[in-house]
Length: 129
Image (cartoon, rainbow, N blue to C red; front, side, top):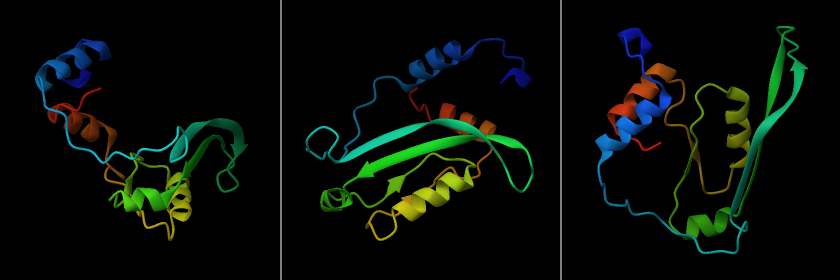
């Protein structure tokens, strides 16, 4: 956005996009009623720096843990799980492996999309922040 001469900050963009969205009615969603933490708990964070054996460069490790009772989700009519990953192939492979034979295939709708293109499409679609 700065390439087009916009001088405002992130909060300015959020306020503008919120105004564009207006008062939209809530979208229908499947609701799974369970005890807290029984169905899914997701934890994501950063770990230690490790050396990539192929490049020799140090990289920050990413940690992702998901506990999910897939059977109840499938019974509730959930057909897949969407992840917003763009480029982290190791995380994608982990998620695919963890969900094998679960009845809930992972999908990656924005995989490989350039971040500028994704941001512009989200603003155009009035995605709430």
